[in-house]
Length: 324
Image 1 (cartoon, rainbow, N blue to C red):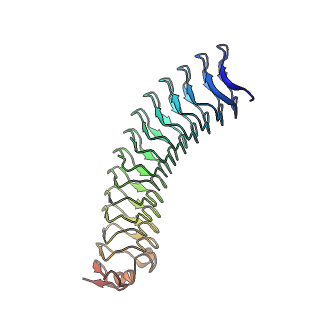
Image 2 (tube, rainbow, N blue to C red):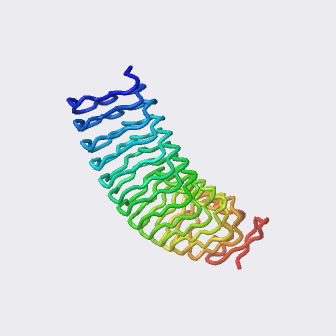
Image 3 (cartoon, helix red, strand yellow):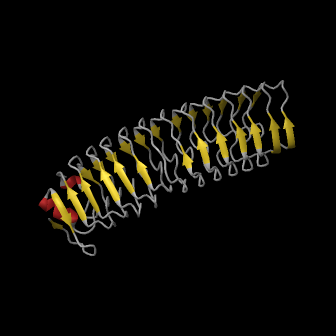
């Protein structure tokens, strides 16, 4: 669309179609209350648009409506809106704050992906679903709340939020998706007793993460779940965990760990390239379920398969483990 400057949509218009203003150079648009729906990518790539008010006649923000509006700094979402669609504000690099009203129940996949300047956002308790990658790469996001109604944290939901140092996961959450918190600035995390699964790469390369307690409710720790959390010095593995995936704690700062009786399989390189000097095995793991000789530093796998349950130690610069 070739329009520039300001544009007032007349009251006779009832809907805005898909891609209606795609790649226009408008700096402002007035949307009247006569508008009931705004189509997918309606204002996609409107790089001159700095602010917009959505009228309370609109009930949903559809897919990619304001995608790549990289000058958009402010948006007002009315109480009538119940859902924010996939990629609704993706790439709005100058968006600094958003108020989500209590009427919203779902936030779509990638809704605020790469909103680099978004520093804080309040998600109301009405929200029960936060889509995959919803806040991915929001580099300056320092705080965010997850409402009590949310039951799963989807893949990549907060990945790349490098200034996010803390977050509270509510008790209703049952799963933490793949790379949900990867590349974040988290220093600690409390995983509630409701969580049963920690997905692949969930906390991948969280370079500031110091400690983690995995509750008894968790059954599996996915591949690379805590890979390269290089200052991670304390991990408590709950007594419900049955499997620890490949590279799950590889390249971490651990010096000791206890593997509970419940664990029946340990993946390849699960604790490789770590500073471990003490490992306690409380149960029996069959050789076929115990990765390879690379699962732990040195010859620990071989020594455990020969010696069984107990505590094994080594000197920091040695590859040889001894059962205490």
